[in-house]
Length: 329
Image 1 (tube, helix red, strand yellow):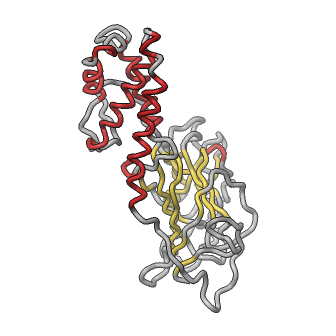
Image 2 (cartoon, one colour; image 1 turned 90 degrees about the vertical axis):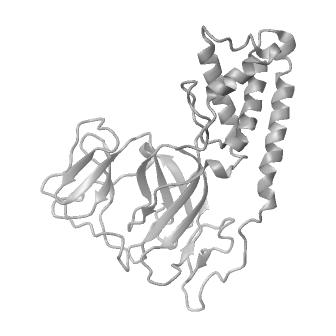
Image 3 (cartoon, helix red, strand yellow; image 1 turned 45 degrees about the horizontal axis):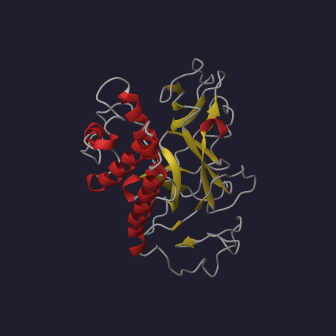
């Protein structure tokens, strides 16, 4: 069940009751295509990066770090941009578990130096990630969860002979022959490899890259990515305004009306578009300021224990002195 109980049809019905806008989206003919295009444009403007609405935020399915592996394909398709990241020393037996907060960055080169904890995370389309080769017959993949130290596993993201992207989904021992699926195998299809199982990841789905490279002697981190969802495209008038909650639906209606001015054939009406659109944008900025009434998550913490070794990592806002922002170390 989504956030909204308001349909696009009800928005169109309301706008057609406005006298000077009525001819723009008439009840029949090609009105559906026009309304769907305008609604998609409004949703895009509502979910621009400067508006990080809580109701559009979601937690991606977590992934776990493997030694010498920086790229992790998944079948996520809904990531617009990453808000923040939490890395948890998942196998640590202390309570609470130690954790750190890597930076979310727009772009990230493949790292060839090892370090811990992870400093940066970025998302990529899966075809942009790097993949290993099948490790051979009889190779053991040790489960990551429960391991006090990162197991010395082969790559958990490989390509088969038909260039399908495969991610390990069941740990075990590889079989006698490499896994192969027909070319262009659909996302989510699985293939057995001895007691291991591989899952196909779409080239155009989204995966993650972390830096620095997880070392073999390190610990397993669970990477939790919190992201803003992509703007939804409208394909039919019966769609609800998800993920917009009902108490915010008026903002969508105001934006939809501003685009109606843009589509008018009457120059006197279409000439009002810029003013109407800017008024709508100003209203959104005022609404977004609600978040300014809530304090940011901030505080002072010791960056390391007295006997802890130094970290290797890029200097940046989350790592200004060259070592990780690490709690519980």
